Image 1 (cartoon, one colour):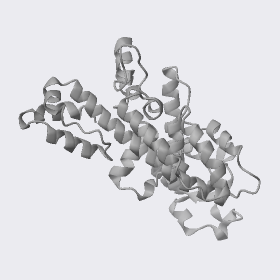
Image 2: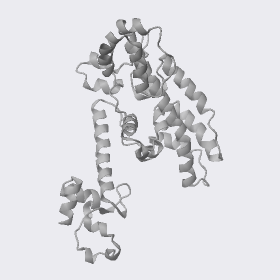
Image 3: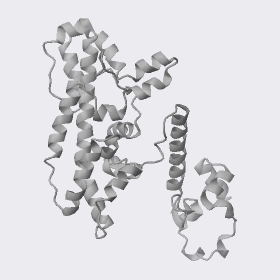
Image 4: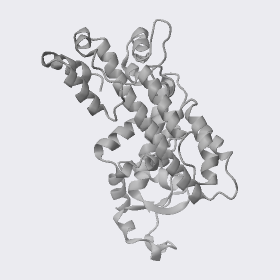
Length: 321
């Protein structure tokens, strides 16, 4: 009965639940005959604890809810990589550090809106980014059009609109400006310890390389971790390393915020340039300063548009968000 209740809570079948927790050696015994029966926490009898850890498979009492979340998260990451394989893309979602990223982004302390914003960035889920928008394309021509970055495309050049392109190499003037300003600010970050002085130059170099945006959000891959390992010393403690990385990562998250705000403004500029009616009325008043949020950008541009044209602009602008 206890296991039946656990199956209902987890949403997993009996076979999936037992095999994922106990492996092939699963055997159900009365609690009284187990050697740890006297020190089992009372919550075990409410089916809120399980015996083994998902990552290490070691015998360990951990909350059932955490185990269920881990199983579902692992299944979702595997499904995303399988979907990428269908599109002939290499796997990437099983080589992640999502738990560390949650600490870097301080997701537990964010409001629902802020958390949703950072989770879409972390999981690369924005449909305004071409590599997501093109998934629904029915023809190769449509896919190519949706995948191409509209912010920096020209008759001579074109680039795939991906998160890596957006944060690292998009050549729209506002993106270049934001990137240069962020680079300058990062060079002024105070490095208070010897560990900081060893780690931060490597972080800055990785930010400029492929998938550098993952470094900024704490979602590192194995290759990036290996390069950071090379500057560590045997005397560096885990606590000191964690403290240093979390402190330095705050400045990298600011870079993501700055570049994403610049992209939102660049999208508005591009939309306005393709709308003759709106462009003629606001061309002389478009600001060049970056804004910290998409809401402020929206209010700024709507205030510049004649009242009779605002409805059309809102309709076209809503398709970008």
